[in-house]
Amino acid sequence: MKRFYKDTGVEEGEDGFRVLLDGKPMRTPAKAILLVPTRALAEAIADEWAAVPEKAEINAAHLPLTRLAATGIDRVVARRADVIADTAKYAGSDLLCYRATAPDSLVKLQQELWQPLLDWAAERHGARLVTADGIGFVDQPEEAKATLHAAVSAHGDLALSALYNLTHTAGSVVIALAVSEGRLDAAAAFAAAQMDELYQVDRWGDDPLAEKHREGVRRDIETCTRFLSLLENARLRG
Image (cartoon, rainbow, N blue to C red; front, side):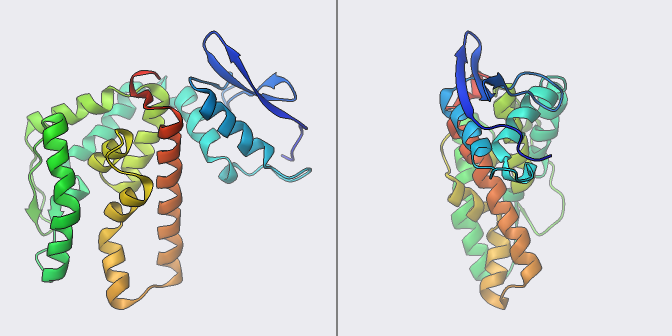
């Protein structure tokens, strides 16, 4: 579908902010009005649509904030419990809990970069996750999994859309929560999530496919981080 509108804008209503295309409220793929709680997010979404060149094809890949908002409205609202469960389940297999046994430089790097995040999760949420050497599965305490489930549940529907994507992209609900709560910025979250891969690149060099994948991860993390920031810590606001 080619660009069919001339102007974009934002309209404030009693329930939040609507994005306008030629003065008409934008709708999601499920035909719901795209309504967001902050002007900052609405304006950023409007900017995405304004950036589409005249007569150009509308590419969903160039509208990442729109996609996250629409997903929150169309899918998270209807499947909220499932989305929470699919996000919180990473507490049982979080990336940060699985440590290398060699070489010493990687062991040290994981300890320096990952352990402070696990310590933060323990202090902030009372979730004391257990680490394991190697790739063997480790059972996490039920209490820790329950408290992280509660932390995920505290997010509103739109924030959950980003948190879900961020958790799956990073392989870590701890990283995702740290971003949501301002403990990590996008660059730090990417560094934590891709630490093993970046370590291997430093030792052995890169290849085009791996680099392309890594850049996709970077973009996803940056988009989710920005979305959560534009929601202005909307964990409790929807």
